[in-house]
Amino acid sequence: MSIADDLDRIDLKILAALQADGRLPNQKLAEAVALSPTAVLARTQRLTREGYILGYEARLNPLKLGRGMMVFVEVLLDKTTPNVFEQFKAAVQVQPAIMECHMVAGGFDYLLKTRMADMAAYRDFAGTVLWQLPGVRETRTYAVMEEVKCTTRLPL
Image (cartoon, rainbow, N blue to C red; front, side, top):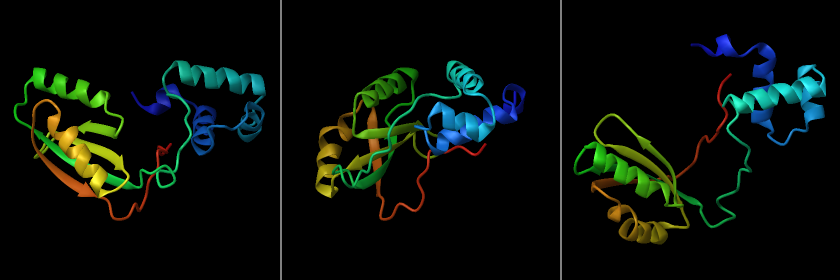
């Protein structure tokens, strides 16, 4: 199933406009896609109900909030059994410093994205949280020196 099967060009325009500004008032959104506010509201509600729009949130500045250091971590588990995977995933869910966790194919099992104040904070996190996660055998840490591109916008 392709996106063209479910969405028309107006739906794609709505999604693009909301990706650019999630706080766009319905009236302005209607003007941007050349539909009535009622029709746009109905489409936006349908796009949300059908799972195309997952939600809305503010993008916060990590530097201003004491989380300026981004760290990626490769995690290799000691066993790759369904039970170990489930325990690891459950433990990661409750760790607010872990912003993203992705199971990957290749030389390790998971890739984590974290945000820390500095290297001392990461070292503390590694010792008290990361290395205590269920099934962790080995980790490799990559501190980000420069964030070249960061977006959540999907190409439509």
